[in-house]
Structures are given as structure tokens and as C-alpha cells.
Figure 1 (cartoon, one colour):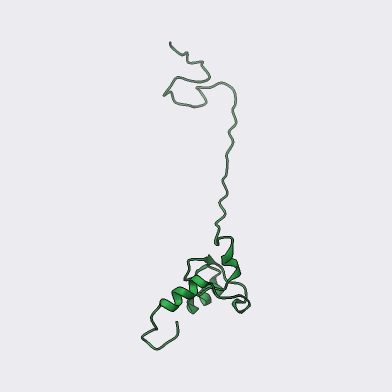
Figure 2 (cartoon, rainbow, N blue to C red):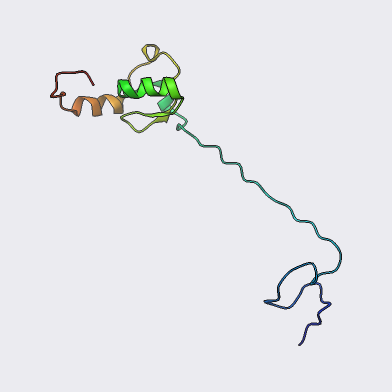
Length: 105
């Protein structure tokens, strides 16, 4: 079976272009919007988390998210004293050795 050059579907492997199909055509460009989810929904929102002090300061200045000891990623913006401490962060924090330089973490 042979396809003629006027075939609107073109031959397999034939270049597609204005000369290969008569008339006009339209195409739809689909944009997939990805919204990063910086935090998991659920219990993580009910707790305050442990993060290094300097990371909190950097986040306050730059707006970049921080990562807690438990792995939660978020941009801090609420008073942590109003919430109980995350039990996973607390467990990890208690397992850390004290700093050897005498400074706070």
C-alpha cells in the first residue's frame, strides 16, 4: 500500500511540516503546574520542631524553608511555645551528644 503525498496523515517517518498537510491546525499546550508541598499534612502541624538556631535566622531573612530533625520541611512563622515538642524531634535531640565547643546548638 502506498500513500500519496496529498495524504493528510503522511507516510510513516515522513517529515511533518506545512507542505505535508493542507489547511491549518491547532495545538494545545498543556502546562502542568507543580506546587511544592513543603510539609506533610497531619500530626506534624500540631508540634513545634527542633531546628538549628542559625537556620531559623537564615530562614527569617531569606524566606527559605528549614528542615527539622524529624525531616519536616517548612517556612517557620508561628510561635513554637504554643505547641508541644514533636516527639520524633525530641527523641533525636535526646540522642545527640552535647557540643564539644561548649556552645549551644
